[in-house]
View 1 (tube, rainbow, N blue to C red):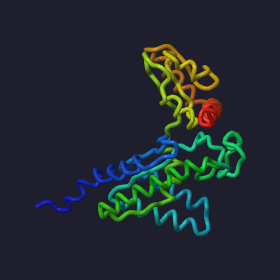
View 2: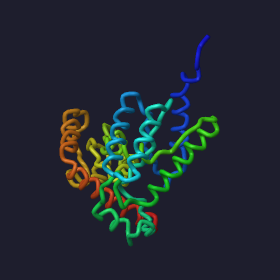
View 3: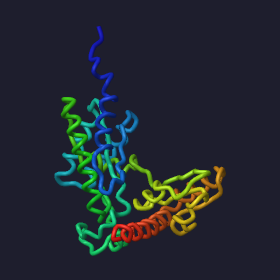
View 4: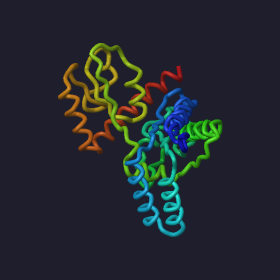
Amino acid sequence: MILNPESEVLETLAKSILLAARTAPKARGIDDIVTALIEKEDIEVLVSTMEKLGDEKGAGFTYVFKRDAANLRNAGAAVLIGVKTSGAAGFDCRACGFETCAEMLNRQKVEAEFKGPQCMFKYADLGIAVGSAVAKARDLCIDNRVMYTVGAAARVSGLLDADVFINTSYIDNSPNSVCEAQILGMPVISTNVGGISSLIENEKTGYLGPANDPYFLASKIIEISNNPEKASKIGKNASLLTTKVMGSYLAT
């Protein structure tokens, strides 16, 4: 006899839930959703961070964060769904409260559990992705909770982090993947082949280097990791330029 055999399929079901988030509709069809299946060693990182955040925020937050931390520790499975908020959709829709996307991107960000202001389409994408995940869990008859506290702890602890795009092609044209990363405000490190030099101005909107040179790629990854201000500036430059070009294209 096998006791509690359903526990053996929790990971598979959790991945199905994340797939629903991944395939949910996205603004302009650009997928900047980030997902993760939390492993056992990550649970304690999140729990300790949640408890710390609760103590720092004080008042009624202490109880909420510590209650959710206990629930996370006892959960059969947990997933993270986030969104890369750098960059903008390029519509100048003013939903963020600014006249243009460029004005919002240049605004000094406020850092707390989350960082803002950001493009409202990013928030909409995240909401739709989370809603799709919850709908899938419902279809599977799985009891679930959506916890802001876990998301806040994941961001503060750096568990969801993907802040650089690496393009290692040795034959290419002008890849859409590079443009999409630039729109998201991610610094791009790429081989200088094909038409990629028309997309990236070296050291200003990204990094260009020779093909088949892993030492170049490694050195630039280390440089970005050790200099987040420079990485942010390069990502912002690329996002502003690409958003402007895409806006002109849409206008025509």
